[in-house]
Length: 488
Image (cartoon, rainbow, N blue to C red; front, side, top):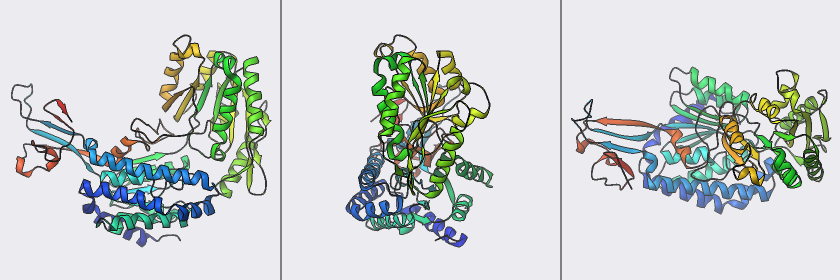
């Protein structure tokens, strides 16, 4: 199914030609809602196809499809509201220093967006996922590079989206689809592609990021590449509820067979009796977890090899050994190590790298300084979590200090929770410092739409020539800032 360079070119040009059909926001929002309705109506067929290719199970996939439909409708609401256009109008002011001319600013769509599907979310981060929904909402056609782990599902979903588009007079080319590694490379290089969204590995994402920057005309590349998602458990929290924390950690690290991008991969837990209770609870819970199937054999092989390499390091223990299960499955487990081993550069740096699958590393620290030393060595992450005692959460002790230490590390900082589960909400941020992502944007939540737009300001333009979004009488009823005052 590898697309040729000519087929990629055809898909991109068809998407480029479809830009005008998305100009009307009313049409865009109606299209997004219809797409959600049609996907929901095809649920049985889509879930069956997804399960056949991913083995993620009908329950998980049905929930993910519902999330995908919710995302599409949420962006339709955002498009209707219009605040994402960031309309700002300044009338002339000769008394200002320097004088202010007539200025009117808003945001316009960038153009064709290349979307690179993720393996672990065949609906929510794939053909109809958040990148596609937000790009279409911004008024940008998309060309999706299908993930090789679910090609048939990708074709089915693209067909549903095109059917929905046709109901609103939108050309089928508004959602293009290509398959194959070389097609993905050709796509990022195409001169009519204006931006890209990617979810995947650091190696693959960095290669595409570099290609996007090396183009004659560089383009924005919003990539989600990898994350360790550290968790800090204070001694007081462990003393207060070690068993509950251990059980919660087990559930989070094994959710979806450990294939979530926000799986906690490194846990700083205290030494001593409270930490021992936590380890026992984690051991019991993980031991009760059934073996599961990873998305493909390449990932399974990498997981088995990765945990074996980590377990072979001196003084690394494996209370529950992760690795190969049956012929196609893997078993969950975790490794423990003294935090001191991670405070300086060396062979143990391997434990500070993400291992995709149901495994986490628990580093036992002796004091706060040791925990801080490990945190100081971590790269950027999507999430960082701290578990505090009730007193610490109320403002006593180092709770605020720890939050301050975690904030530079991640785009979402959690207190007394677990990072798995990324709510689709206006205040959500799913991104973080490199290598978690290649930009400061989010790929989940309402502000994800901002990735696919650019500001433009008109100076001294006659009212009759302005787009309706920027006219004084506000014929579209948009939220805006008018001469310094916020209007809704």
